[in-house]
Image (tube, one colour):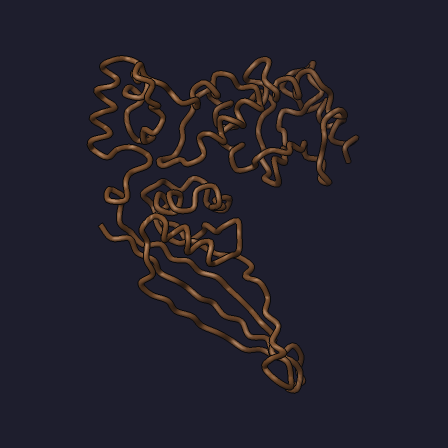
Length: 289
């Protein structure tokens, strides 16, 4: 298959001198991306530029389906790819992983992107990186000037920073849900065999979900949801309910409601065989003004 891909690349490339096809499939840490070859080589002397202009397809690692493989953070790579498309950085509100994205930018040798993500230090040695993405870029760019400092002080007073105090955090609701199942033996209930929670789902406003769960929130099924919109498609990268509850408690949420439903089925047509019980449970958390 790799050989077939190579032959197809020679006949389907934007640059006649390049052995790579015009459309490139990538597997980055388990996340699949499809992009153009010219996007990957948009920044000269970057890691991707060297991979896809200085090397041949046979020299690059591939997964079982022939996609080029990169052992990096698959979630954060979407921002790397967005930057390569137009050399412009746009992050969502309350983005909690700026330092990790800077590390990815350093790895991919995107010096300009890494510089934009680095903390800005003003003349009085205060760090000016906690400005909300929805704030004007002018205020952030003036961090080192006196006018910029006045702008940042005004933003700080009005509570427009990315890490607001507990009193200034927005109120709202977050619903945590999970499905569980267990098998009860034929003789006594002490034979019950519980199965682990397969997935913890998160429902609520996007900005609140990102604020609470940060990089433990898997957004792969709904990646472009605006901060002020609601979603029920997020889930957590771990399966410990207590860990989710601790996260919610740390930022001022408390449980206000809980509900659960269950069904029972036999593993076979024989009623004497084990029964499988399946349940779905939701916990509603609230943070008041």
